[in-house]
Every structure is written in C-alpha cells, then in structure tokens.
Image 1 (tube, chains in turn purple, blue, green, cyan):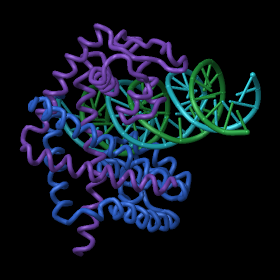
Image 2 (cartoon, chains in turn blue, orange, cyan, red; image 1 turned 180 degrees about the vertical axis):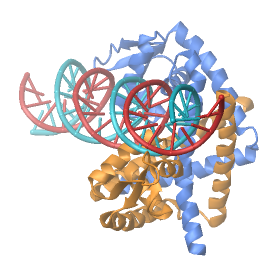
Image 3 (cartoon, chains in turn red, yellow, blue, purple; image 1 turned 180 degrees about the horizontal axis):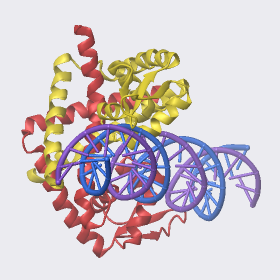
Length: 154
Length: 154
DNA sequence: GCAATACAGATAGCATCCTATTTATTTTAT
DNA sequence: ATAAAATAAATAGGATGCTATCTGTATTGC
C-alpha cells in the first residue's frame, strides 16, 4: 500500500498543478473583465513594457513562451483596442515592430496594480524562503521537462 | 531595487507554473499520439478505472475537476473509440452511467505504464520530502485560490 | 394533484493554446 | 549572380477548457 500511496501522490502533483493554473486563469479572467482585456492579453502588454518599444513579434513571443501564431491573434485584439501599435521594420521588411500606445501605457499601470494585488493576496501567506523554494522546484521541473521534450522529439 | 526584484520573482512564479503545465501537456500529447488517445482523454479513463464502473458523468467530472460540458465532448470521443460505454440509469432517467469496455481496460493498462514512466522521468531527481513539500505548497495555493475565487464571485 | 424549482446531460459558441502551411523577404551557397 | 535555404509573420484548422442555454426528468411546495 505504501507504493500505491506514493504513486498516487506523485501522480496527483502534476495533475493538481494543471488544476491550479486553470483556476488562477479563471481568477485573472474575472478580475480583468472590467478592464476590457482578456486574461491572455495582459501579459503581452507587460512584457512589451518591460522589453521596451521597438521589439519584434518573434522576440515578444519568445519572452512570453508562446508560439508566433498564438501571439498574432492576441496582438490583433490589442491593436484593435488601440493599446499597441504595429509598424514595419525598415531594416527587414518581413518583420514588424511593436510599441505601446499612450493608452497601452495607461493600461499597463492599471494591470500592474491589479495583478500585484491578486498575486499578493495569493502568496502573502508564504515566506520569502518558501517562494524561493517553489521557484527552485519549478526551475528544476522546467529543465527536466525540456530535456524530456528534446529527447522525445530528437 | 530589492522590492522590484522580489516582485518580479513572485510574478514569475505563477507565470512559470502556467508555462510548466503547458509544456507537460505537450509532452503527454506526443507520448499518447501513438496510443490514439489525446492528452485530455487519458485522465477520464484512469479516473473511471479508479472510481469503478457505474458512476455518473457528473461525478466523473467532479473527480477530474472539470465542468460537465467539458467532459461530454471527451466522453463522446472515448465512446466513439469503444473505450467507454454509456448506459442509462434506471433509477434516474436524466442520468447516464459510465463503464470501461474491455478495450478501455486494456488502454488503462497501457496509459498507466506510459504516464508512470514519464512522471518518474520528470520527478526522479526529487526526494520524497521534496515531493511532499511541493504538494503542500500546491495545496496551500489551491485553498487560497478557492477563497479568492469565492470572494470575487460573492 | 399540479405548478415551480432543481438537476443531469447535451449543445452552442467563445477564448487560448498548438502545429502545419503559406507568403514575402533575407541570407547563404554555388 | 542566381538558386536554395532560412526567417518573420499570417492564416487555417485542431484540441481543450469555459459559460450560457436548452431539454428532459425528478423533486418540492402549495
């Protein structure tokens, strides 16, 4: 029975991580509805703000950890809302350069406040050492997973 | 700067959890392609096996942590493949009862082996104490998130 | 007994991610 | 110099989750 229990625990861990991220997404979703941006849309704004105007879509996608086509649609929405501007790169006519509009910058401020409040609410009971430990675990899992992925593909 | 750094770390933690679960799903996806079941489909099979034949869709959905409509579509696929059988509940004509077919039971065996191998591969570098600690963190986050969710809805 | 409410499941439609392919442009190799 | 390969972004289509709504059945309240 000990073996069985251990196996179930490990099994549940990854399952519950997925569950947790779905729930977190739902919380963010309801929190951002009032701002008029979807949950998927706020992160590109913050990353763009952090990386600075004038970057390419490809680099923003890499920063977000999503694929190019996934970003294209989100950008279409953000550009339609006037939060981001997409211009052509004079030095490479295949590429597009991204920049926050003034409204986009204002939105970044609002989003940053909301996200910080929600994250604080979620993490406030954890000490710095615990946060760091979780970060370390996640990093180890990421590394291992990347190796596994590479092995399955190669 | 200290404040800034801490903030970014916390920020990254939840972001990276989402990233991690997406990657894990991708690994499972490529591993299960050869079995002819999608990543979303294997978990209902295992849960049904664990819960036993004759349960209702509603209870399986609750066990999986997904909503009824999300399960309906997955079940349609699994039934079309002949892995699960859906029958009417004589005591309540609204409800349907679920059972694994013989092929479904065989699939459960294959899936269990594959999942166990992948999870072992991912988690083998973690000690039991570390696994338990991660579980504890996840549980605390789940609890806190549920409270937040309830507060936002009420 | 019958109307109102609750519940199980299915359907419709949205959001987000992915991979595969297409188009336009740039870089590399012969 | 030109043909082949590589690259940036867009488009097409699939998978998975959600909420809202519909249908049929059971339960509750008067």
